[in-house]
Image (cartoon, rainbow, N blue to C red; front, side):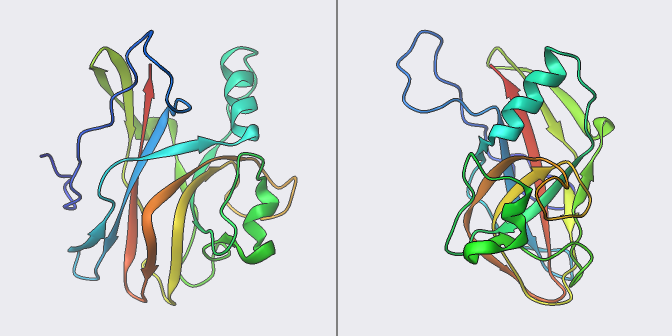
Amino acid sequence: MPYTKSGIRLPASPLPMPHGGPVKKRRSLTMGIGALIEPDGSVAWQDDGWQLNALNDEGETDTLSVYLAQSAHLTKYACLINGGTTAPTETSTMAYLAGAAGAGETQAPTVGGYNRQQILNTDWVSDGLISGDARYSAAEKTFGPATVTWTATHAGLVTAATGQAAGSGKFLLFLALSASTSIASGQSLKYILRWTQA
């Protein structure tokens, strides 16, 4: 099984449904994997496997607008989410991140050692055709080290470096971690995104 340079184990990606096969669940294009990193660089915990995304309504619209209508490509940032008592849904917008109803972003950006991590177009690298489907993987992104304890239940992709109000950007997608994760002061969380076009 392959590992990243920082020691994150990379399990095999889930395979898409065979073309023409029965539809058992909504198709997910993006997947991610997270790992909790100790101050010495060792991996304390990581997702058991690749976690599939939920594409928000804003993400669906943005994807089609850029690809089909040639709208401007928006800058994208990975973020961490504490779903608390209310996990994000397909209709969630940036206002969800503000923390209403017992959920929101793990920390406000620039607080407690936390910042959203920009994913540049040059961070994406082609993995070629995997089982007949094109796949790209993004560079590993590091959140932290934390200076206070954070809790993360999901990762997300948004279009702004800061801001948690409606209209401050778009909330494109979210991906659950395999378990609610506490990131203690001094620890970091690394995250990797993949996109498969089936």
